Length: 149
Image (tube, rainbow, N blue to C red; front, side, top):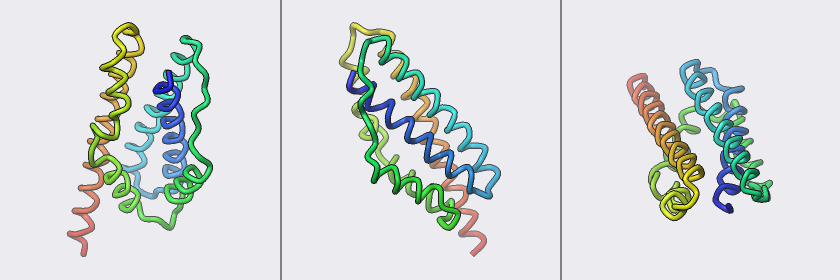
């Protein structure tokens, strides 16, 4: 259950900083993609919270105040370029299997709880779609900037 709680907390935090980014970006294409990702992150957090409650688990995991503040300042700043924000995510996502390792471990290890296993499996699929979109968005904008310069 610790994995569900930890992941719930991460997904909720992701949604919070993405909302701040959406508010300050002037790139309509980026805004559209980020809104889709935001909705997925919100849905993941809600589903994980629901499943955790069904299992009688505590919701104790929290992102540290310092980490939250740092992400809000960075992603919510109109002074930080969207390309730099995308680059930071590309860097975070450079090894998706490692990044999502704690979730993969839960999927592989919990054979008695099919519902949770499949919930996590489908969330992983969504995460991989997000990673693909972020990488493509970054590459398109980086290429466009190189062609402009």
